[in-house]
Image (cartoon, rainbow, N blue to C red; front, side, top):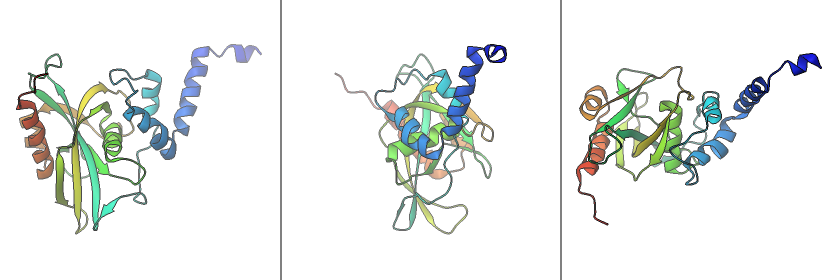
Length: 215
């Protein structure tokens, strides 16, 4: 009895969070966690610390058995995470978040395969949370691009979305093998080796300079 009482409620809570994190398997993450983040009910400017602590225990999706294809092209989706440099004002310059590639040189935007059990927007958000550790608002699609696979003689069909970042997480699934860095648009275009991602960034920038409709 005394040994049990020596365990503080704080330690018990931490142990429960750890166990819950272990049970956030691929299926639970895809059917609970990521839909919760994408839900309109989710407060984008808030993120429970306990949930953030569990993020690093959620395994990133692996394998291709749910991968979507169209006419032999693997379907890939991703996001350009961005923020306004001064006080969130839409009249100010934006910064974008880039991440290190697992293979190869340079930095890039988070992206990955679109799978059959999720919408395109959900896949884009999932990849961004897994690879870059940020959450926010997924905005309207920037476009579609075709690009050659680095490892196979096939073409991929890529879609990119802007993501206005509301929260940068301290813990995220790929934190141990990816670096992330905020930079200006010219810096991102210089360091990113992928032409199609640079073109998507150009589209995002063009949206920022377009005059906003008056209400």
